[in-house]
Image (tube, rainbow, N blue to C red; front, side, top):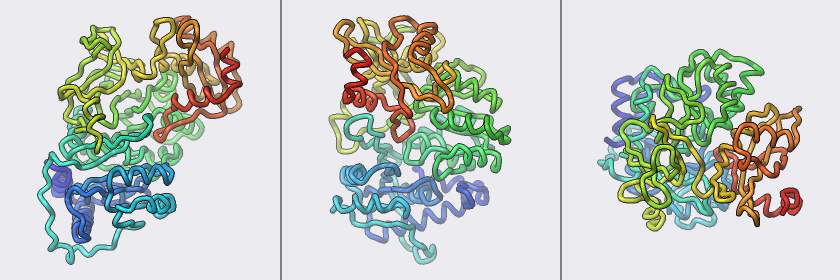
Length: 501
């Protein structure tokens, strides 16, 4: 089945049910199906063809959902563009994807307009969706769209030097809803989308699963903790998929100004590890446990904590319908408890990287997606995240997970954000350096934080230097960027001196 057909089936089953809610806008399944049909026909009438790329530079909105499904129904390829990118970054995505048309939200369009000058291949630029007459467009035939055709190209958030365009087909984007259904998502749910639809998590774990089963999605145009909590109370939202950084803000806001959040029965957190202290605070305020979910732009979800089987700190067992293996650096299958790279075969796996056969070949091994993430699997099949393969700190021959050290730091009540990196050391190869941002009105010094870490994990994992910043650098998903911390450290003689370099 292709994604356009998926929407049509739900529109036939529950035509008047709200499909998408965004502030004052409420759109039924029937209305969404009709409007996306008309927009798909308009795109074809303008001379675009199946396979052409259409860039979507827009915050969460009814327009974004319409644009996605118009692309899906016309056989075109949706290319979401992060609303936080600068003109040069936007230009790279438009050029690399060879986008023919770009839709840019009026508030964001100055950035895209600046990028447009560098994209001669871009044939059109729109700052609004056209007003369409369904009857006039009814004669434009919609093509037969193969489920194997590429439906979307999602550019990675840039933890590598240049973002790569991850290609997802209609098959892989229907794989996400199949996997999410095993977590109990059905038509009784109202899902809150707090992350932008340009991310695979919002697309494949929120919007598409909801459309597949006839549930309702409540969109936040931008994330604000207060608005998220108000939306839960107003629309009686039952399920949330959220980033840990956002979860922290929601916990703080709910603690200050409580809302009725009793409707929430499922909270999934992914994108980074969730500190145990944050999980405990969430449980006390919301009455349910956070369930960590793991995935990546190339495939999501891969693992998830199941209901009634909480293991704080674990990213859970593998999802149903997929296969996993853990591979050691020597290429052998890891034993239980042994650290190695997680590899996966899944119906939600991407098919490769746009215009980058070398990266595609390096990422897939005989059908297995190499995640680049280090994990260990326990005897019960639960996975424990150990870090990115390239971010593991090796001190005196011992591997140190940055996440483990950060988790220990988060046990101090004054610590708001923590990021840990390895820096060169002439004796041990690398030493551990931590960066910390403190809560407003709280204090802590280096020695007490080092003592706390030492009390919770092995001595050799304790940071030899802790540096304090007002805020830590974060990426487009709100995740602390260790690469930026490394650059900051390398460029600051004062920091290097403090760390004994």
